Amino acid sequence: MFGVSFANIGRFYIYDEMLKVPFLFFALFTTIYVIAQDTTAAKLKVFIDCRVGCDIRFFKTEINILDFVNDRDAADVHVLINAQRLGSGGNQYQLNFYGQNNYKNYIDTLYFATKPNASSAIVREQLVRYLMFGFTPLVAKTAYGNDIKITMKGKKSANENAEDTKDKWNYWVYNVGVNGQLSADQVYRTRIFSSNISANRVTDKLKVHFDGHGAIYNTRYSYPSGDTTTTYLVKNSDYGFNVHVIKSLTAHWSVGSRASFSNNTFSNIRRKLYFKPSIEYNIYNFKDVNNRYLVIRYGVDINNYNFYDTTLYNKIRETLVGHQLSLTLSLNKKWGSINTGMHYRNFLKDRKLNSMGISSNVDVRVTGALSFYININGSIVHDQVNLVKGGGTEQEILTRKRQIASNFNYYTSFGVNFRFGSILNNFVNPRFDGYGGF
Image (cartoon, rainbow, N blue to C red):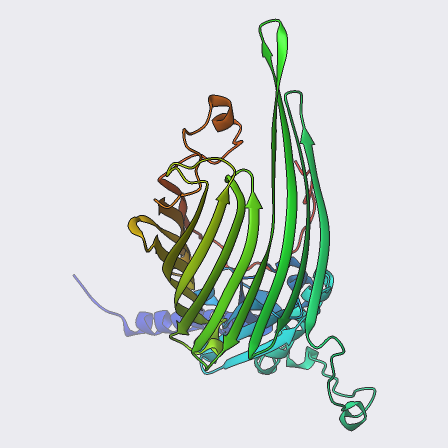
């Protein structure tokens, strides 16, 4: 027979309520603890996207109130770092700060310039300094805002330091260099000696460049041939000079010209005189060069050749006129970078004497964890008017003593990378790094 006792029901109810009390305290304590931990650990998460070679390890040791993450989608700030060469020989660095997640309304761009002789240590210190400038407004909103120290008191007032900038060199920069390279083993020895000189003047309106160079290449091959050792020597040289003058017309248009003289024994060129006027148009403003650059360029070239040996076309000297059209695209974005160039060229007397080529480097981050890259370089060549008639001997081909006909060349590399696991990467551990290692 089934029956219910109200007394038993009351006892079970009281017992059940008593069990809930410790669970409620435990849940409350756990919640408070987690919130406290989250508040303590609420560092700004940053993703450093450096396109110019940066010492990320140094960044981590100098800025330890941030979380450096490897996943750009998980970051609160995505920092894109680029640089452009200055006329002085130094570099202008551009740091783009893109806020994400809770900081998506934050966007900023900072610039700084380095001197031509700036060491890598000086450059990385300046990069850290400007990274701090960009992060400061956001770190101030975190629990680490109290750790920020800002000093804006200079040694002298701005008025005391203010004076007109004068350059005693009138923006001209000169370089002189001598180089040597030696390498050898039991069967092979090479010696290369070269020198160069250049003068450059770059302003926002005019760019002028002069350079001269010369080099000697000596290579010796020694290999057994029966009971004796055969020695084969390869000697080549080249020298020349170039002059470039480029004039800025508007924010999109430019004109320029190049003139040169050159000699190259490997290419069968005793003397080559070259002159090429060109015009170019940038779809975007040239001031946006760090982020985007799309240029169409057209030029007409005049080539006067004097060869060492008779060419495939039975010429010992020749003058040819050609023209070239090229396209250059460069994009540096949060999702990656694209740098691509294409050209087509032919001599006017015969359109079959032509060449075309492409060079493309693409690095794309599909997601925070998935990325891919592809590099393509190749050309089709039908304008080698300098090649020696009759080709080369087996030794000349194997030792690259002279240039041999080739209708094409190419190189490509590609890859896909998927990263998973911890996104945090704040630790610096240099043990067993560097030369030797394991």
